[in-house]
Image (cartoon, rainbow, N blue to C red; front, side):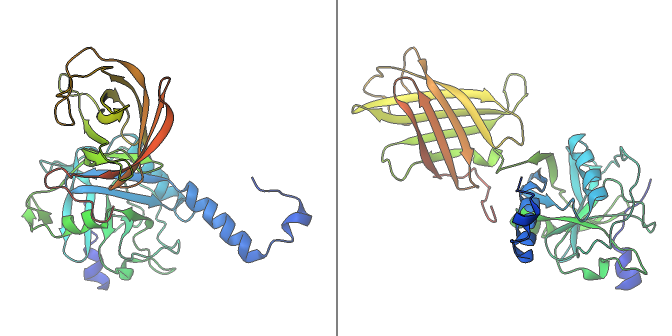
Length: 342
């Protein structure tokens, strides 16, 4: 088994127009900013859904192409699902990618990769880098997130370091919560958390992904009396999923309107569309907490998106009521959850 130990470093170091005439009129700095912004917009992102909250990292495939591709290969293979953060070194790093909840080692799926530690990216707070053994080209699946400015881990022309390949874009609060966990030596692993946080899944994302954290009551501040209950869960009968369940309470011509929908989606999706049903003439006792009794009929479609942890946009399309959108604001949070840093 290849042991990862970045602690050894402490011991040893302590389509744009292409006509030349057109392009020549654009200042060089503008071109740099333009292409930099395009590259940033296209940068791959990965969501680590941990038991202590979400972490979204943006990867720099321009500076670290080999390392980024390697990491994405492991993500796409589902390798990180069910693994833990097995090392929490206070004010230094948190580390994952090698052990499951029982501290059983998971053999890497792919060959080790070339060291890219001289790519100009530094081990500063919030960056993600590859862990390895004393062999510079031994990195496989294990990675760490820097808590402090660990530039002594950077590589140089004379000595390879630890290759940075991205940074945390959202979820530093989660990273800090993990780093604050009590650690012990366990099964030969130094600085192992007493209760290691699980990575439930690691998936690629584009926009802000739909998360279990979005399970909540939501409302539109501009439309009093309009409310949504959203639950992101698994199918209780099969434990398959994920599913989104939506209840929408509204008014039409002064009468209460209850709508409901459910659909499956894929983890990493940033938009979920479902068919909604409603009761045309609900009983007078129906309200936001008490759904109406009666036969539901098809009403139209609802697309749910989230800008972040606290806000979202819900788009509807109904043959009877037309199309529109709501700007939704969170009203509740699941017990023990937080939107800090999201």
